Length: 250
Image 1: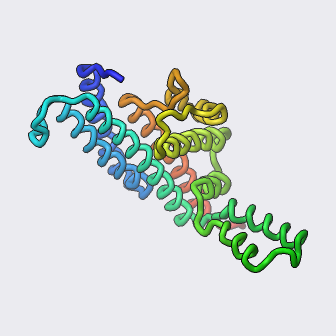
Image 2: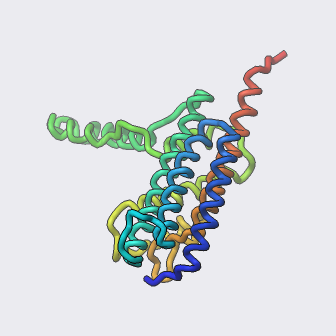
């Protein structure tokens, strides 16, 4: 994988400027979900600046000459960090909206497994030993999954037509990219279903020619922009819902 240093430097400078603008805008908005996203903005911007200093030969702590393999390794780490922390920020933002509006949240996977366990107990009866029963209980997740937060918000707010499906597709695709990048998959290509998820979520640009997951410096700001757009709609809907609670039926 060869890089064009001049183009990469230009892309880094542009991304740093965009992330700087994002940070200012998010702080002005002030809502908790925006502040969570801003943590990703600031930390990713710091990593982009570090990359720029290295490629420009201005980081005094690197005394050796430019090594492309090292730079690419650091670039990949930045991409993974961005995908990982933006996912955390999204989940934190959804949780803030749930707490603010007192929206009920359901552990969907736990419910499905509990129903399966009930069915097994009914059909097998005494054939299930205490140990087997305990093992079955241990399969029930104790914590909410990302989709639990997402479902609760999208299903309980009055949102524009088509928005729940579009935002769900986008955030599911982004979650897939984060999961895929978090594991060693140097030779693992995207499956047909994964390609479909990324395409539906308008993240088809992350699909490489060889069906490997790819990322580019130029993709970071647009992804971030789309995440902010999702929360713009959700927070607006939350605000409208809050104003409705003050109304009294006559």
